Length: 368
View 1 (cartoon, one colour):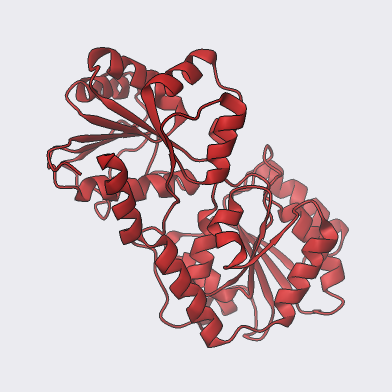
View 2 (cartoon, rainbow, N blue to C red):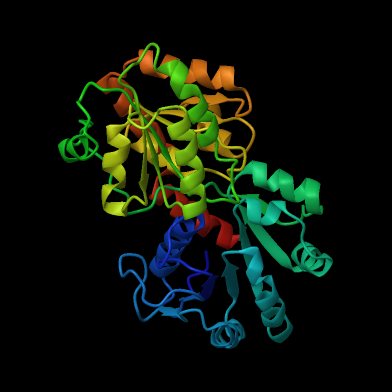
């Protein structure tokens, strides 16, 4: 990579909200911050202040939702920048303006998943095909771009990595404070799902997991299912009605948002992490769970397979097949992991999706 290459990274939000895209943006912000050019910049539309672990205040500016100011500053910065990376397809319009004023600029778009799987305006597809490089987080998303939008030129897959500050456990005991918080005993089997839950998105697979619980209780009568993640009121009400109707209140807990400081401990609490999703562009939660030595069950119909290294890190199931899902959960609960199993999972994930490896891949991609 040329050491004098100036990078401008444009994002919708990085620090003020949570989710898979935001985690990817934090990691990229860290990569951009650590590159040698001191004039590299990170601009974020909806953020206010940066997290200094990822980027310095000198290189970062947040616009607190002020769209016009963000747009103008992005264009002015882009005029003097050799390489512009945008975090989302919604920022293509700003890229067009930058390209008009700086024809030599290189524009790179990160394609995560569902945001590029849906219909795109003709002008946007034309501009991406003709003028942009695309980094997809999985081959699955790369293939969707090809099949849906005929975007094939300058498309490269760079799999996501663990957050550079994700807490990697050195031991694998279930955290005592969480056992107490959820009223669990150390030998009690625990299933864990972590995902955003909202009224518009029912493809994460937790509905199907809930359907398997009554049958699983026949062999695991003290089973507990922790469904974690930010949840809106409508979806919470819908799920609780199902739970109450099936008399599962003592077996299923909706925990709400999990703070980053407690994330590793929740993975350690689980005997099996389950997200049989149909719409994962990649699935950062899978590699986080594996880094904590947790058994994993994913869907096999999206980018999840790549996060699971095609099954090396866990079990992939047809997310629409309840019987297959039930048998997989039942099997993981029967199969007790050894300390060696957990350490092997962690070692494999760090080798495959560690931050330093990701950093090198980004540097190499910027050089081509």
